[in-house]
Length: 212
Image 1 (cartoon, rainbow, N blue to C red):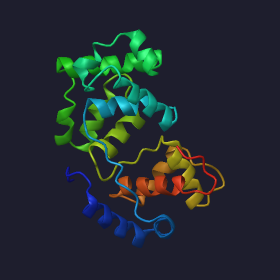
Image 2: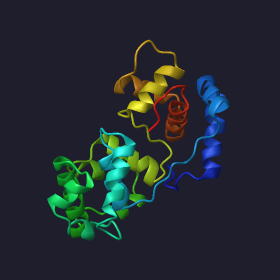
Image 3: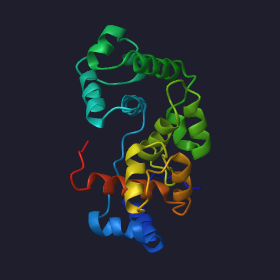
Image 4: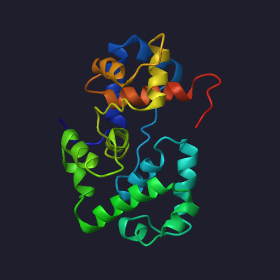
């Protein structure tokens, strides 16, 4: 397994493989083109942003994230810990997400959670270390691995847009649950991260889709 993040070259390599292997994904490529990498810089700030995106719209999460910059020049663990509950609430953090992000910041600041060290670990080990932190569930861990670390074979089955797009392109009678998405994704190994990008691209390009 390679730990080298996906780049434009490997994105196109994966696209070519998936196009040959799955005619439904080939149709997405024909309709929507090659998806963006949607990469994010690895680190504490991105992990906070992903936590903010849990179960809310991306626009709402980005608004809260952007408001952090009214109080912090740089969003890192030590700086985050200087913010009190009232300030975080003014930024748009719920009480629960404030607790989660303060816990992550404390773990990073103390050195008990080596966030930077995840880049050198396998997908399984990096996911295990992320999941050990309160507030980081499977969806958050997988999105961090996929978008911040650029791993090639991450399949975030808890993602709603992924399920909606999979139902559409596979012409399923109902929206697939996590177990069904796992089964669907097996055919796309070892390029499931790119399959996810294609499904998101399809979701965003659906007619009359309320974009986020």
